Image (cartoon, rainbow, N blue to C red):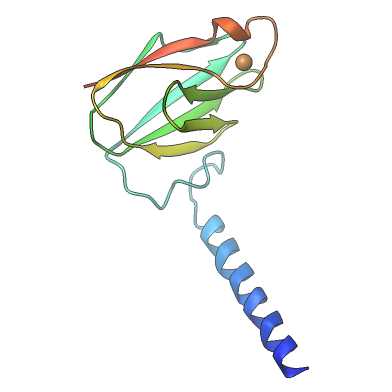
Amino acid sequence: MQRKFAYFLTIAALTLILSACGGKDTNSGSNAGASEETFSQEVVVKASNWEFDQAEYALPKDTPVKLTLENLKGAHGIEVVGQDISIRGNKSKVVTLPAGTYEIRCSIMCGQGHAQMIAKLVVS
Ligand SMILES: [Cu+2]
């Protein structure tokens, strides 16, 4: 009985800690998750139907960068081809990439223009 109660307390405490972390995000809330990580700069990719706001995004090499996806219109995701990086919806991820040119594309089947949603990530 007592052990069960202790278990319940642990779960309750964990839940509190986790929700406290989430609540600490002072940004609009659209990019929860990566706010506690360190990064040198933020690169925002804005997606609409059916394009990204830039053809190329420049990132510094070997440096943690907060990559943020903003869906202006529609529901899109981005994935960095050949890398284990995927962001879906209005979220962020801190990424560190070696120098190179990467292709990013929409990772959510979003409609007729989905296949055209391709941009470059130039890391140097
Ligand atoms: Cu798509």
